[in-house]
Image 1 (spheres, rainbow, N blue to C red):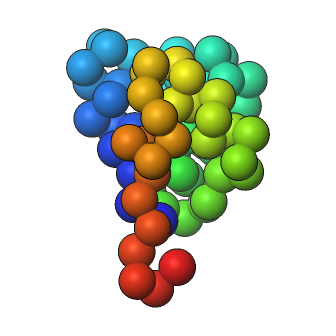
Image 2 (tube, rainbow, N blue to C red; image 1 turned 135 degrees about the vertical axis):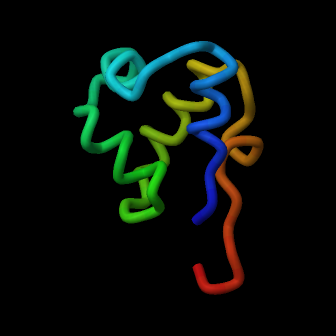
Amino acid sequence: MKNTIKVERAIKDYTQEDLAKLVKVSRQTINAIEKRKYVPSTALSMKIARVFGKKVDDIFTLEDTD
């Protein structure tokens, strides 16, 4: 699943650690999501989208292989 978390973080000037604290996960979890090694739960996806003031499908996009 593709995501725009790194771009959204840059816009808000958030580090991975900043975002992790806001959504109550580890920095490593944010890193794994950004690198597409981990697909977040629906709840976590919604929390991340809320932090950026966007819809979930503005942040996450399914690929043909998903």
